Length: 446
Image 1 (cartoon, rainbow, N blue to C red):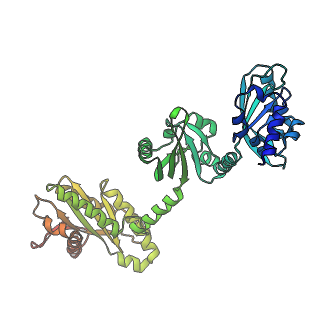
Image 2: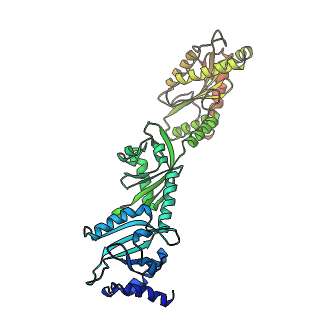
């Protein structure tokens, strides 16, 4: 800026007699903060370069205006009310965020601080206004506010204790609680597992930022929603940090994953575990056997007697309906925790683990033989169906048990031996069960 113009601005200010009473003239002139000395009417008597650059009016133009004339219409009332209190001596100063309309017509956001100043006798300068341009900050806040309110993801701000400080509409929709109801709750009240919040807080303390944290929230209507959370710590009052979280509802994704997992591990006709899931559970059961030498388990290989004839005579639709009934019945006949799997066609496999004794195996086998015959045959088989069962046993204290080292090395060996024993039961006339033991033949039972 030309020195002549700079001196002119300062000179116009000096002409009011105000600066002579202030010992910070150099600071006033060179400050990056806009400064204006005004009288009771709100008319600028002197301004610094920064103020002129912000507002866009020359010092001479400003002398003929009051601050109300270049204040945004929506902010005039609150500024005037505070200024009148200041003039009346009711308050010593005030601070507000307000908008100015510059000479070019642009809107500028400013942080305004106005205070009284000592003046010499006969001077009409009464007050000093400090103006800082915060337009960029306010625009950033507006962008954030727009993103916050219009985000399809739920966004929430809480304090460290979990009290909700701010939520967007998506969060209200996600949780089913109204804003007033959320004011009475804390974040941990919505967690299906409150311990997960503590895990989240610990992760935040370690890094200050957590992405993709999975949890379940309980909605107001009691329904569970699966969510992933991206969260970070935010500065808070008195050094206490708050938490900002972006929460995405992934319930549909989880349900799809579960559906695909169900399809991959379960039989599409009966809903029972398929071979893949059966082998996985067999591996787990044998791992427990390896850790506990005294434990025992059994694999029962089941085959419906005469089902092929039913299928050929009445068609696959009727046959499928019978298989679904048989599957449901088998699930009722075994113990809680046991596995009933469809092996293929009319073959099923039952895995009995954590047996307290071999006698439990026989009890289940008898229940199956008796219970399957009670399935309502409908038009498929007027005389009902029976089942042949082969049993492969792993038990340390029973002579019918298979060698542990064989089945631990090859878990599918259990199924093969049970399959062979099933054919012995079928050859014996069906509706019976047999144990299988390598090297000693098969023993008929039932």
